[in-house]
Image (cartoon, rainbow, N blue to C red; front, side, top):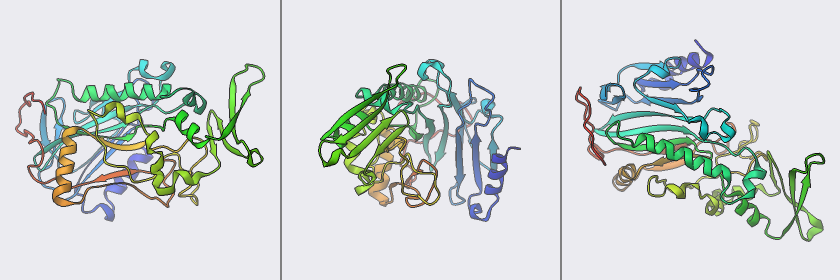
Length: 350
């Protein structure tokens, strides 16, 4: 048993979790499998107040009632209760494998069927490359990968359902536009490597004010002199540069963001609100949904007034990412009814 599995078992049996009488935990720990390893983990804790919860078996194409607490790690590849994929190798920058992919599960709660898709998209490998074009080359790679996931969960193999896609999308602000805005009145100094003439650093200085350095940009350095711009009013002034989701405006919806950029926070336990100077802060961590899931959420909002989209631990060190959450209630019969009979589901379209 791995240390992670041991921790999960202790968590499931703790007093804090005693009201959650069913659980499904999926951990991709098979790091030796280069073609399949994603390092993703999905934890589902089901409260005792929820009755008759069913989970979809992708192999049998039918729902099964959820009972007990189960942990899956080494057997993820053969578990029919989920779909897990690593992106095709040609999607990876320079075709070099890394841990990017998704895990999909399907649930039926209050006669409402929906998919929960945990995703990890590609990061920006270099601030200098991201700054070169608008949109950046990395943005294009993320668009391709996210489109692949949406095509997979909407293909013809299974009955279609509402879906929520969540995780580290690695969405970044449009770097070129951000730098131009933050350094409108600055002059730029370019520093190149002596042996290759490659650009290794950009320094933006104020035109006056003793040529004060405003921003230093390197492959893994984004050192802006005033971090407060990313925290003031939750950084909402920068949302105009958060453009990557616009490509999917007809396929994915997001509630209004009212929290500061979720990455990259300092990992110093005493610096819970401080960003690291490695990347431009951005809303990497998101919860997105299909148009039909949007209707479910908005209907819940109008009836219950309990929809919340926010981040966790604003003043506490949570690692380099701040987790985000979406909380809402599902009224019985609010969504598309799920067929729970022990037979394959028929094909329908939302």
